[in-house]
Length: 328
Image (cartoon, rainbow, N blue to C red):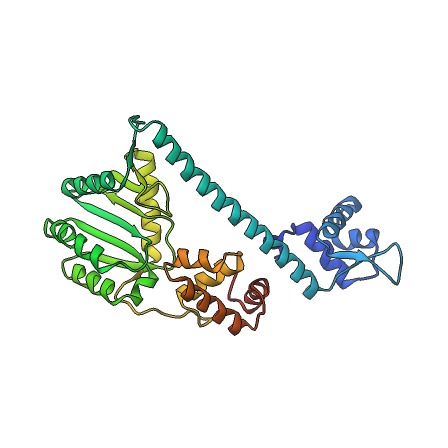
């Protein structure tokens, strides 16, 4: 039951036995659990490392289990810190990978690795995308994590999108949920839907991506500056993975015309995602970027969630959210 919080089954059994029989020693616990004494001692070592057992003030030399409410606070705090550290490592790795790709492209702009084509600069990217639009025959799949689209960008995309759909090309696009608050973006999506384009929304998207005919994918080198450079991927293994990623997100995304719903906790998809990011230690700026909303909107959502939880800090909000069942 507590394996997700860092306890193995044997250690959890020792902890439960100490709670049920606070005066039991190693030998008695071993007998009750039907295990060797060394197994009990190993469990006590782990419980001690997790601060779930402490020396007794009343009986020097004896360990006692901390109460479950305090113990769960300790385990949740430890897990939350580990999740935050892991998220920071992921973000650092992503930035390092993007930097490496960018440096490699600068050092060897004319090189051509099998299945990888480097595009440097906005002009080169747009030229390549225009060529792909002309060559596509069957299907286009798009992740659009930029949030609200400007009227100018939508107008520039109109002739290309219309031409594709009139040629019978299947188009599927996943936007961020935040575009539902943009009337001109929704109007453009509805116009395309009349021509046959399918659109859905998701709380967050992993990357900006365009896949054509399941054989070519274009992704930016730097997610913070999509105009700086991009790579065109054609390797079969890579495309198989990217298409599977798109399908998995598409499956859980909601049709753009469908009204947003709240879950059993009364949270919208955006609020639920923001709460997870909040509990993982993301700043308002990072949350805004993930959700495709303004910094002010992200702060308003985060503040509203903390108020509903009665929390005075982000850490406390994460703990209370787990207690209330808002976070698993």
